[in-house]
Amino acid sequence: MKKIAEDLYYVGVNDRRKLKFEDMWPLPKGITYNSYLIKDEKTALFDTMEISFSDLFLRKVAEVLDGRTLDYVIVDHMEPDHAGSIRLLRQYYPDVQIVGNKKSFDMLKGFHNIDTGLKLVGEGDTLSLGRHNLTFYMAPMVHWPEVMVAYDSFNKSLFSADAFGSFGAIDGGVIDEEMNTDFYWDEMERYYSNIIGKYGAQVQRALSKIKKLDLKMICSTHGPVWKKHLNRAMEVYDRLSRYEAKEGVVILYASMYGHTEQLAETIAQNLAEAGVKNIVMHCVSNTSASYILRDIFHYKGLIVGSPTYCNDIHPDIESILSKIKIRGIKNRTFGYFSTFSWANAAEKKLDIFAKEMKWEVVSEPVQQRQNITKDSHPGCKILAEAMAKKLTEE
Ligand code: FEO
Image 1 (cartoon, protein in one colour):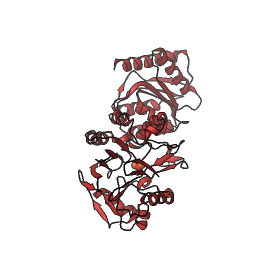
Image 2: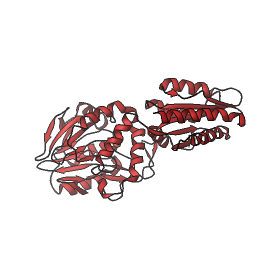
Image 3: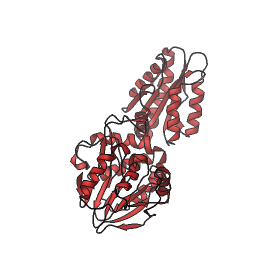
Image 4: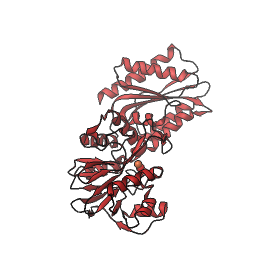
């Protein structure tokens, strides 16, 4: 446990054991489950803990309480990485009041069969702990429907649930000013694109409430506490939730024998010759979608290439297209190319995808039957130059 502001203690943990968050998204540097405790006239805990860390967590809470009882646990988010230990917490502190909204209480009953000792709050409701006064704001779909955030006007701190969170354990410090934060910015974008990326409009709605608060500190449930870089964290969320992207191109491809890959390489070289500096290539069969989504959220241009496989698009390309579609990524500048041996089904699917996404397509698609030849190059050049021109126009 660690004191991070007046009366405020960090009681979160690092998880360096889990290989994939939600069993999908790689965690090469782990993840934190953050929890915070205010000790005022009343005591209040902000969210609990993933169940496998409950023993360590409960010990930290008891150490901070130092013999006092726990008056409130604020449930900002019911997902099990935060609410997983709530039943156990209730057993340790039977008189604790669980503070949540109507939707969180419905989930509390469903996940934990708890429906007593509840304190219901709604938009703008307040709770006094003594000198710390909390105000609650609903933030539905950031990242589940029951999510809310809590603002403490004494420390000017926001308990923001998943918002402003990142992947990555914290190595020693808790607050950003105590650490080198370079690592976390990419991980914040990866976290956002993987976990919250579908809900841009809802994040914007939450941000419009948060921006009105007098803020000194954001206490998210994942990653560092933002204090020194609070504005930068807000800007990242604002940019990503507006689907606004930077100048650059992501090229995605799948390739069974290298022909599609050679087209991708040719397009990349032509992009570079046309002056595009930020080019990121991913073979989708060998790279986790987690990193691919991060880069698509980051860059404005996207070029996708697929071979035809079983008279359809390559299944690994289909899988990433589905993940892009689910997130409703807006305003990308799109190009595509395909390879085939006797029938081109991939191009038809890429054309349907482009129309579904309502993205601007920069040029005619490039297609290659069987092996790449020097005749394949003009099409690649046209596509690359059209993409480069479009990016620099904006
Ligand atoms: Fe960190 Fe949506 O749970």
